[in-house]
Structures are given as C-alpha cells and as structure tokens.
Amino acid sequence: MAELLDEVRSALGALTRTLETASDSAEVLDAVCVEAVRVVPGADMASITAIDDGEPRTAAYSDERARDVDQAQYAAGDGPCLRAAATSQIVRLSLDNVSELWPDFAASAKQVGVGSYLAAPLRVDEHLAGAINLFGFGDHGFAETDSKLLDLYVTVVAFGLRTMRRYQQVREMAENLETAMRSRAVIEQAKGILMATHKISDDAAIQRLITYSQDTNTKLRQVAAEFVRKASVPDDQ
Image 1 (cartoon, rainbow, N blue to C red):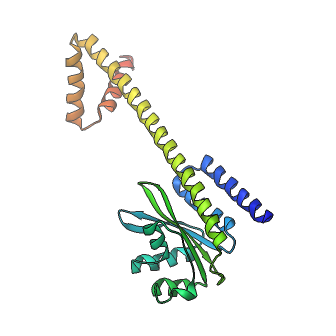
Image 2: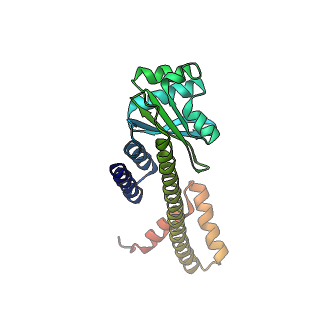
Image 3: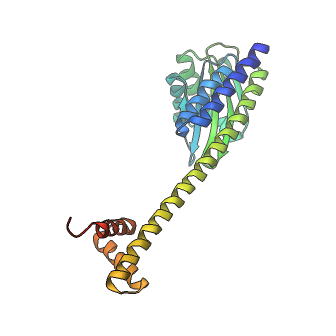
C-alpha cells in the first residue's frame, strides 16, 4: 500500500507539472493517459473519450491499441466507455463477461490482448466531457479499490483541466485587450495626423480611414498603422 501511495503521489506530481508547463490541451491529455496507467494497478493502457456534439472521439491515448478498441465502440454506438460517459457511472468489467452485451467491443479488445476494462466519466466543462478508460492485459477485471483510485484521479484531472482552461481564457482575454488597446492607439494617432494635416474634424478623419479600409479591403488597424508609418518617414527618403 505504501508503494502504491508513493506511485500515486508521484503520478499526480508529474501531472501537476505538466499542467503548469504545457503549451496546449493535447499535451495535458496525453499526460493524463500516461499517469493514469501509473495510478491504477493492473492498467496497461489508457485513453480519453471526448463527446463532441454527441459524437465520440478519442482525444488522447497512451497506446494505439487503446484507440483501436475505442473505435470499435464508436462504430457500434455502444460500449463501456460510452456507457460511462452517458450514465456518469464507473464501468468495471472482465472481458469474459461482456461478449454478449458488447460483442464488437469484446472482439476488438480480445484481439489486442485486453482482458479487463475500467472506465470513469469525465466532465470538465461544456467543451470536454466523456470518459477516462483503462485497459488491462490480465483477466483480473480490476478491483473495487481500482475504481476508487480512478475516481479520485478523475476528480483531480477534472479540477486541473478546468483551472487550466480558465487560465487560458483569461490569458486570451488579456491578449485580445492588449491588441485592442494597441489598435486604438495607432488609429487615434493616424486620426490626429489627418486632422492636423487637412484641418478636418475628428469624425471626418476617422471616416477617411474607414473609407480607405473598405475600398482596399484592409483592416482599419492596418490602414492606420501604414498611414502612421508613411507619415513618420521624412520626405527626402
């Protein structure tokens, strides 16, 4: 038990570091699969099923064979990962017991040597919901404690992904605001130059910029920036 707890602690630590340094969601989801295999004894492969507008897809996996087993479920329209996602309940099973219930899934899983399966529902936000799936090559069927470990792991993962997405949203808003402020500054500068040069009003200056923007199919910010650049170049150059 002490060794298991150490492994869980190490896996969660590695996942946390990835959350802090990853450049995109795909990198994080790949790490979620890798660390899930470390967290749950008997797990040899992992995948993440994401449901987009009712359509399932494998968003990440630790082994291509896991993705292939997922595809068999998607093609059949049913299987343990889809059941976990739909019911918000953990699904734990041995392949020997589900051949009649999910024949396509069972055949695909057995073909790659999978004997046990464990899936837990994953809900991050409206953009990411589905299941984390674990595949075991043994026929142990996973234990009840494995279900609890995966449930705990999914809770941590969902919180981490939710936090990461919120941070990305805030960063994107800040970047958009900075871009808007820079755009406004250069437009105001171009407008001021026009007003001073042609002795026209504020409204007339901005209308000239807008008209040129429309006539040339160029963004207003780009028109203003080019105008300011040309205005700053000495006549003898």
